[in-house]
Length: 407
Image (tube, rainbow, N blue to C red; front, top):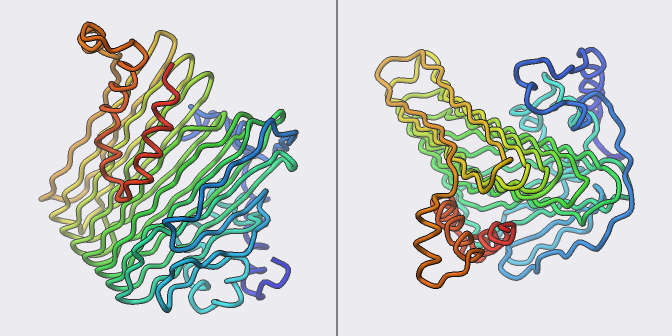
């Protein structure tokens, strides 16, 4: 960041100044009543870091168009493996200068520093990912960025900016990994996704930290006219994780989908606050999140469909379903609607249920061991979300990771 152009340095300074002026969060605020902000370092709380018990195993680069890796925020050189001409995959700190014309007007425009999580990240992100897909170009294989934490520092802050131009298509994976840590690490990440008219983007966020990591994640996606954007969030690891995806339908006929899968075990605490905002007529959105909860874990889902005046023909859905695997596990679901336009079709649903004993008995009575029967029930429960992931390899990997948490 030392070679950042003046506008980028000025933006960071403005974020730091905004952060200094904001009142500290107390946890009594409505939007913070489920997850204490101090757990996520939102008030400048300093985590301890600590030694790692084990090493991070990075996925192979096979089947990827490009890959970037960051260890405690320090980037390794980008690997361009199979990129079409004109596609850019770069470390975001470098892109501030080398691709200033593509970055300047977009960075901080979807996720700025008008709230505390945004200001914390904008003032302090270490390194990040920049992906640019020019008009009409299709990237057949995924671009993957991997942010890891070793415990050597008490924090790891990352940022992603993806721009898909008119008629272009891409898949981008943000993966967050660490071994189990003896101490604590605060993680802050922000993702901004721009999809121009007729473009298509699938963004997959895989949160699979080890013990000790506490993660505040913000995802913002804007879809232009007839554009399609799909945000898939998979939350499996970390002590405390709060994810805030917001989908903006900004063009007529846009299609924005926020899909999520989470599995909390032990004493994990996961909160997902998912918003779809319709700013143009005849747009479609779907918020679909499914979670499994085990042991004494706690999950929270807050979903909101927002249709301000001027968006007739909106077609929007919101569904959250939770599967409780034992006594002592807890899930809260809060679906919400804000409709200020006539001639819309909107619905919302939230449910919390236990594993059906009859389903379990049926499988066991046919010779399926109890643990494998639970595996099959959880897999079937998540299938609706997994089917939305376009790459077979990634879908199978995530399915196996979720099944492995069943006890």
